[in-house]
Length: 89
Image 1 (spheres, rainbow, N blue to C red):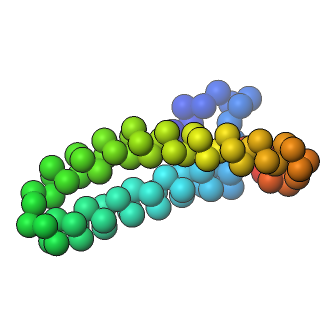
Image 2 (tube, rainbow, N blue to C red):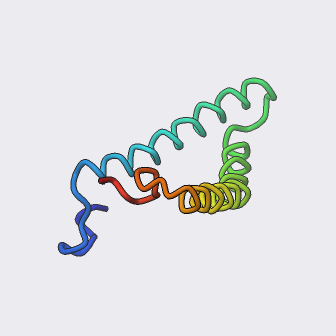
């Protein structure tokens, strides 16, 4: 994915790794939660994965959006420059 970015906008390796590692950790969490829930409920793991994915893609993204907006507003209000989203220094 990194090589698909335009060369002049390409993120450094460290920042790219930090961004993608967050995604990988989230996917690992969903996977293990799905395995645990399927053992607990005797449901089909594939159907549970679909439900988890749909909830994550809708409600999860909405909660993240609201959380980021709230934290960004507080950071701007308090003028905490080191806590701005997307600013890696």
